Amino acid sequence: LVVLDEAYYEYVTAPEYPQTVPLLHEYSQLVVMRTLSKAYGLAALRIGYGIASEALIRAVEPAREPFNTSTVAQAAAAAALDDQAFLRACVERNRAELERYYRFCDEHGLKYYPSQTNFVFIDFGIDGNEVFQYLLERGVIVRSGRALGLPTGVRVTIGTKEQNDRVFETIASMLREKQLA
Ligand SMILES: *Cc1c(COP(=O)(O)O)cnc(C)c1O
Image 1 (cartoon, protein in one colour):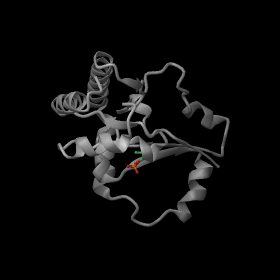
Image 2 (spheres, protein in one colour; image 1 turned 90 degrees about the vertical axis):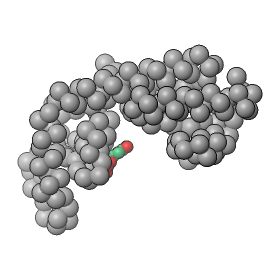
Image 3 (tube, protein in one colour; image 1 turned 90 degrees about the horizontal axis):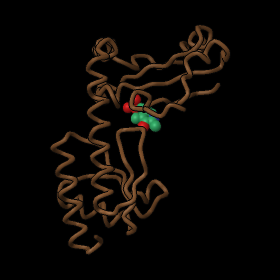
């Protein structure tokens, strides 16, 4: 069994990102997994889907946990998948805000890793836990890079414009206080 985790599929703009659904015709042991937790914004409903050959789905069905999704979640998922205009708007907003992060980092001399998702990794050149703690105490929760094997930075989830403004202000005050920029 080969499982492709495409949790960030909807956000990706890189032209080399593979389109894997056509591969299902060739590989009967392949499953493409997608979630509605990310770009569709339905994380609390705990719903996603897998695409695979009929034979593979039939084989998995007896082992599937009973009641593993709810009717409400399935109805919401079907409606969300139908509303591609809303999805496009979310993805475009995410991309525009991501680019604001790039500009913020460029303006402040911060190194970052360009992203295909709804987060960005910023390298501050100091302990990621220290950055995490500073931001946490000011109401901004990020993920320390220590847990991700990149100890000198943090991963920031792209929020709304207002949330991101607050992140920028807080990071800017940290840079001033710690005399990093
Ligand atoms: C979010 C995510 C998923 C799916 O999460 P669910 O909320 O359980 O649907 C799968 N893989 C990766 C890498 C993710 O980030």
